[in-house]
Length: 382
Image (cartoon, rainbow, N blue to C red):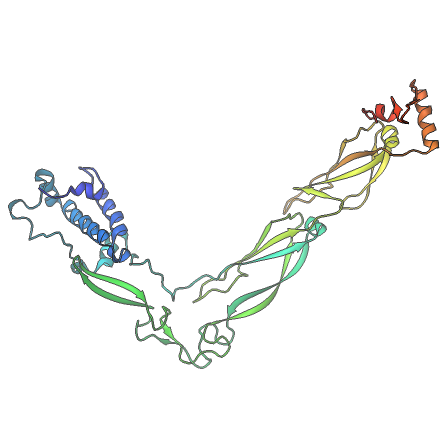
């Protein structure tokens, strides 16, 4: 009998389809591959078990015999199978993974250093006043970024010269090495230590960029801030970031907005809020107010009998909607100011009002008014 249950080794049920077997092997082979678990004896043994199980279960004849007898050693086995897996016959581990994964697998999940690479993004913060955010504004910002060197046009070599193909990696930027293990022959790829993975060598560097192919520049960029932006909004400028490498596209510039406060107006989304102070006489008799808005002062008629805390709406006097038609509203909260002190003339006027209203004015021993007009008109005693 086989020492191990091959189905259990691959984590599948007996009777699994060929595709299920292949999928299970592919997943486990990546996880326990020796190149990803260097020095890990447990992983190496597990990898050996996985390959042994796959060799049997992926072969229809071996699988049939194993399912019937629980072993593949019946009647002398199959060509002296000893549990190893000869990858050398398949051109190395990378080739077998090309079969299973459609190519592109390599130990260490390497990346070509000489491939086109997109430039990095840049983030800056721009401060705006309250009014600039409401109505929009054109601003000029200053940024520092790495750009393609204008002297060498990005190749890093002094004008009149050109980079040479690396003689160690033949321009690939990678070194291919092969080693033998108990599991067979393995091929691995590593970054070329001579050219740093670029595939090119510069013997005479550009005097401007010192062979880097890029130089740091200070740029002033104009940006149109649309009306209605708010705090922490971000405006993207495509292609205004760091320049790419090896012909790659540039990154983007992201402008984060910080909007200052206003001494009068308070903003919530596209709406604006303010307080309007009036006297208790104006609240009782009604009045016409001059109300400040972001567009300038407007007149508003306050009806008689207006109560403290009443909120009026000024339609369309709020913040414009960004890149859209229409505006928010402005809301005015009425604050009724009650005087803390009264002169004699004011007192007499209020006493006459109380008499006309059928009320009596009584002065307490402590000098406070009992049943006062102030308390009655505003619903509380003073």
